[in-house]
Structure formats: C-alpha cells, structure tokens
Length: 246
Image (cartoon, rainbow, N blue to C red):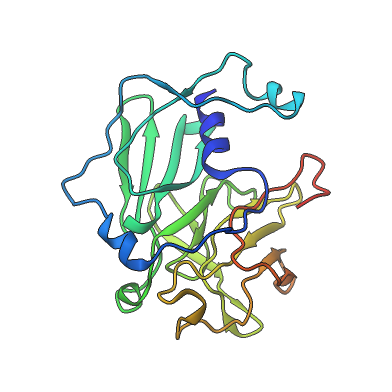
C-alpha cells in the first residue's frame, strides 16, 4: 500500500490553487542539492497519519496503514506515479531537473537528468526547467506522460530509450507557460494545469505569451480546449471517481 499512500501524499485529489506567495527563484537555487547528494532509503519509519473523509478510501488504503519514508534528500519531490508492471515509483525533483525511480531494492535511484525537455539555450532562462507531474496514459502504453516545464508542454517519455515526444506545447498559436500536472479521463482525454512556475519572473516573465494561467482539455484529433482561465496559479488536478467533477 505504500505506493498508494505516496500518490495521495504527493499529489492530492483536487485542483490546488496557490494560497501563498510563490517561492523566489533565489530560494529554490539556494536550497539546491549538491551533485554529491544521494537519495538513500531510510530505515523504515512511520510519519503523520491518514485523514479518512470517505469510507471509499479504505478500499485503497488499509485502516491500519502507516505512512513510510521511502527515500529522502530531495529539494522537493513531485508528480509520483506507480508503474505496476515494474513495481516501481517514478517521481521528479523539479528544481533539480532530475527524475528518480524507486523500487524495493535498491531503493531510490537517479533515473533521468535533465528531466525536462528544455533545450540547452532555453534551460538557463527558466526558473524550473525540470519535468513536474507524471502519469501513465492509455494513449502511450508502456511510456510515461510528463507535464514538462522545460518543453513548456506535454511530453511522452519512453523509459527504455529515454526519448521524448512533446505533442502539445501551444494554445491558439501562443506557447503554453509550464504545464504542472495532468489527469487522464477514462476515454483517454487529458486535463492539465498550466501555471507559470517554470518561468523566471512567473507572470512577469518576458517569455510568457498567454495572459491567463489555464486548465486545459486535450483530446486526440481536437483543438486544445481552455476550460478554466480565471485561476491565479492552478496546480494539482484530479477527477472524482465518476469523472463528473474536476
């Protein structure tokens, strides 16, 4: 059950809107790990507690489950996804531009750096060029779908070859900001959030082309649809079990 708990703890289940000032680029950089820092497994320990608001949660998380620390030493981990076929948890350390892969043995290991799809020219101009949210998607079986700050779009990553394909990066001819999180509907449609966290200057960034920070609907073969345009910094996104509520 540890992987389910990790997904709840990291990502939440609803759209999250920033209620406090965004961290400054300087703060993120000053807290950065050195290249000698290594994410290691900790001794098994329990932290926090599970706040059950619906009995339906008990179908996923046992009532006596504890939250275990699997690995530590990151600036901040984001976007975890459990891949059942590999018995592995993938997640990003966004400001460090690194992706990690955790398995029961050997634990947390660096999987991909850089994790984001920025070019050598654009990466230095970005506040956070690393990838953020990760999900599995029926539209790309066996691969990982990334909310890719660096590419300023959605990218499909092949874990076997580490090749990536960015398949959406603009809305009505203007570059997206820096997609943050994604959720897939049962029919394969995607909802994703697009705050400016990846851009230096955030809303004031010279590279920001869109006036809004949107939530979008992507459907194969259809134009990208803006579904929410009045949130300040849309972040995590999820669907209710019946998919009637975003």
